[in-house]
Length: 183
Image (cartoon, rainbow, N blue to C red):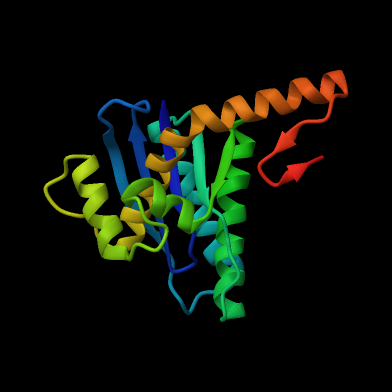
C-alpha cells in the first residue's frame, strides 16, 4: 500500500509518502512541504497548494490519501486556512478517484507514539525510528505528514472491514452497531 499523507496548512502544507503494510517494516518514498507566501492572496495560495499536491500525486501515484482532520482551534483564521488547504488535498485526491481518509491529530499521535497527547518532538522521533531515517524530517509539518501516512497504513485494514460491514448491513437493511452507537 502506498499512502500520501497531508498535514494541511496555508503557509506550510506537509506532504509525505509511505509504502508498506501493517505488521511489516515501512519505507518512506518521499517527504516535503508545499510552501506559500503569507502575504499572497488566499486564492493564489490555494492554487499553489493544489499544484504542489498534484505534483506529488503525479510523481508518487499513491493508492490512498490520508489528511489530518481539521479540529476546532482558538484562532478562527488559522482553522479556516487549515480547512481550506485540507479541502484542496481532498479535491485533488477525489479528482483522481483516490480514497481519502481523515485522521484526527490524536489518532495519528496515538498510532505512531502510543499516546494521543504526544508532542511534535515525540512524533518526529517515532517517525524517524519507524521509517529508519537518519534524522527527523524538517519542518515538523513534513514529519506529521509521514505520521498521517503511517497511521493510515496501520488503521486501514480495520477501517476497511468496518466500512464493508456497514455497507453490507445497509444493503440488507439490518442495523449496524458502530463505534459511536447504533444507526
